[in-house]
Each structure stands twice: as structure tokens, then as C-alpha cells.
Amino acid sequence: MTAARPTDAPSPMEATPLERLPPGAQALVDAAKRLLMEGGMDALRIEKIAAAAGQNRAMIRYYFGNKAALVGRVVDELMHEQVVDLRAQAENLPGGEARISALVDTSLTFTTSPEFAAFYHVLPAAMRDDNLRDRIADLYVWYRQQNRECLDPQPEARHQEKLATLATIFLATMDGLLVQEILAPGVVDHAAVGSMLKTIIAFVLEYYPDDLQATPEVSQMTTTQRATR
Image (cartoon, rainbow, N blue to C red):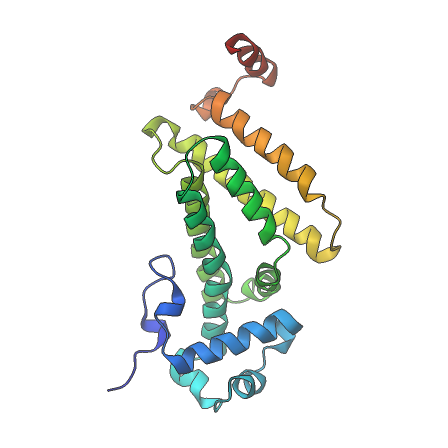
């Protein structure tokens, strides 16, 4: 019986991609991932990927249809695996400061990981490829959701909008830090950034209004904070 192609498998938002690929396809993904981390998008040539995986180049078409679909699968794994780890860590912690601290600390380690740096090498190509861009956009929707649930896995309905907005801002912060690390490794003081981020997130969760259309001045929020102490 012919093995199903990876492109027939469910979205990476539903399960870990590694569990859904036949061995030959996984070997190609692993080879492409290594090449991407070592040499960026310029290193992802069909001949080089096939040679690094010890396979015939025709197998890329067999399993994925084309190189773009293979790259999409690589992107799935680069982001998915680390976010699944983040979610697993958060689920083992109670709410409040411990959960916020775990989210921030683990996310900051992503900004120095070669896997996430490799992911960002793909973005320029995604801007020119509709399928790849849509795939990455879907991953970001899922990534934001994971961050929101790390902040609070079972929020009251009135907190949903605030949490979703905070997760979006948090993800944008991580993206910006990673870009800075790629351009100038070591430039970011992770301890200082982490400390401030934890304070900001805790403050927003505690004092920022749930109705985002009725945002008070910061001075009003700090007055409320002092009054509750």
C-alpha cells in the first residue's frame, strides 16, 4: 500500500508533525532543516537536500509535490516543536507569577535558538509564495493561541479580548528580540528584558481594564494599584 504524503496529513496545529511523516519524508525534512540552519534559504537546493537525506531527488516530489511544500513542512516543525514544549511547561505550573515567569523565560530562550533563527530565514521567501505565506500565517494564529493559553488556560469570558491582545503584543516582542539577536548576537540583555516583561504582563493582567475600548490613563491605573495595596 502506498504511504500517504505528508501534504495529506492534518494541520500541525492538531498534532506533532514528527508523528505524521513516513520515515523517508522525515529524513528529507530533517536534512532540509539542517541545511537551512547552516546556510539559510540559499542552501535549500533540491539536489543538496536529497543528497543530505541519502535519497533520490524524485522523492521530494513524491512526498511533498514540490520544494515549497517541503519548506512549509520544515517551518511547521521549527515553530511547532518548541511551542509544544512551552505549552507543556506552562501546564505544569499554577496561574499567576510562576506561569508568567515560565512563559517569559522559555520564550526568551527561543530568541537565541538556531531553530527559531532558521525560521526567520524563510520569511522573505514566504512573502513571494502565497501558499507558504498562508501556512506561516496559520502557524502564527496557533502560536498566539498557545501564548494566550499559557497566560491563562481557562479565562473568564470577559478576559478573553485582553488576553488575546496581550498574547499578540507578547509574540511581537519575541519576534523583535529575535530579529535583534540575528542582526547582532548577544546585544539583548535577556535578564533585564525578562524582568521588565514579567512586571508589565503581571500589571496588565491585574489592572488593565477588560474593555479595551475604555482604556484609562496610566496614571489612573497606578492610582488604582496604590489604592488596592
